[in-house]
Length: 363
Image (cartoon, rainbow, N blue to C red; front, side, top):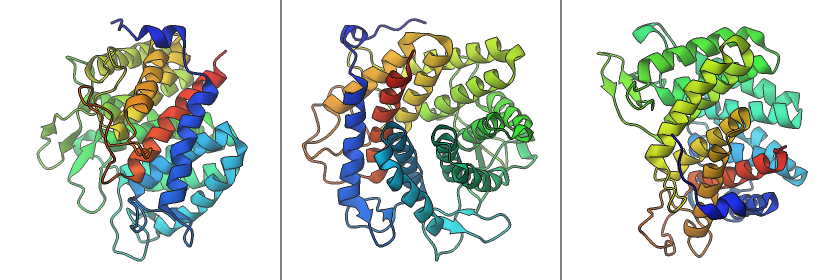
């Protein structure tokens, strides 16, 4: 499936430095408006307390990208990685990061912890800091504790109720295991392949190759919501699997491309460059497209991710520079947002910086 792309982006792509500045700007704004200096954490909204861990995990990933682009942001990353210990809940059966800083009753989510794992593994690989890999491995132990044999495997979404098993927990955990194997821990490879295969078997729609959201464990009922990030993480996991198993590389890359093409057909609007899902999900799809383009040599995937970044920058932010959760193609640039979040600011920053890094690293 070949998709048309805006001619401008095929002939005059934004410079990597321009894209990076687009990403660093919301990070500086978040620092100015949401930073809690006494705790070195960030609030979810202006004037509020510390953010939920989901937003914190995306902020961590954005800071990793910023530190990769410019070492002057490394102290921000180091400080925030340490400050996140406020979320660490040592309660059993397996310690892990809670949804809010302690003290509080246990309320931990396996997917929230998986986002931290992926960010720290990227930092370990790209910034060559062993401490980040140790943090990732500790959090991954908690993530993997969310699995059992019900429904044949996979991971729960939330520890406290264990009602559902979700793509958004199992797919990033599969990728985390495979990336850790690539970083010298081969014992994790089998678990990564197992989680990927289970996720594909349970959640991939055979008609359009996209991924359903979750199953209710009590009766196996499938909830068929589809979100762009549920396509993104299997794409990246297949690419990691391809690197680890060369004999299966062609099949893994082909599966990744089928899902990527379906995701572009559903969420990408080539006439405007906009992605039609939520920013907090779509930035992960853009990141997967960049990785797929690098792995396959297909420029259309990276071009779509770049087109989305340009559209987000040009049409997304309000006059104060705040990004909304969702941008509709038929609506003008938003007026001043009455409410905005760390999660969406960090998502925008991560998107811009991911494209900038891909452009800088392109051969």
